[in-house]
Amino acid sequence: GQSLEQPSEVTAVEGAIVQINCTYQTSGFYGLSWYQQHDGGAPTFLSYNALDGLEETGRFSSFLSRSDSYGYLLLQELQMKDSASYFCAVRVIDKIIFGKGTRLHILP
Amino acid sequence: DGGITQSPKYLFRKEGQNVTLSCEQNLNHDAMYWYRQDPGQGLRLIYYSQIVNDFQKGDIAEGYSVSREKKESFPLTVTSAQKNPTAFYLCASSIDGGGMNTEAFFGQGTRLTVV
Picture 1: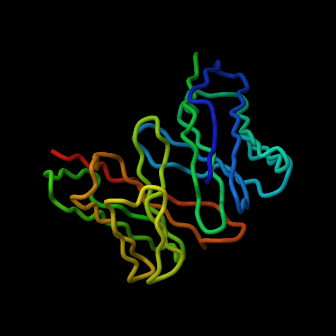
Picture 2: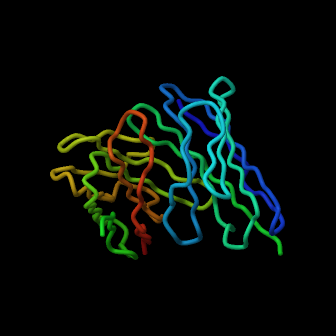
Picture 3: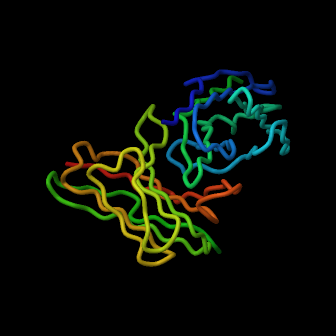
């Protein structure tokens, strides 16, 4: 079967940096992606890693290590609007499987 | 504007009744997905479809049914056999169902409540 593990909650201070980790156990893995979801809203795509290494998109970066079945999302210069849930997701052959999500709390 | 539309936004159903949730996309995407979201459970895959007239069960397909008669449409029926149907339902689409592309576009969701 497939499983993804990520912390249920993370707390950080406005302006700081936070890292959300994700470990996965899947077969037929193609890549790891990250989504953001605000309360009551729809998930929106943030990033995708198919190969090992770091991908940077503005304040957000995502990392993948295929050999370790591990990835993380790095959020820099945190803003209050970044308070949301963040999901890692894996592409497995013909479907997308999501983790349970990490709730990010930001303190002023 | 291209996008994916779910309707209705809120839906109330009496126990024992079937109900159908609509999902339409004009992004010309081949793949479509239905997820269920409960508090603390993340997004769980119900059904998915890569092409017209073909679909596969996800992890929690029991009590649900789908059809894919048109590329643009992927309706989900919650049947009376679903024991705990109250949840937030999300429909998504992606360019294709396989390969390297993994960006999924989501609708705004339907919140179903059984009364």
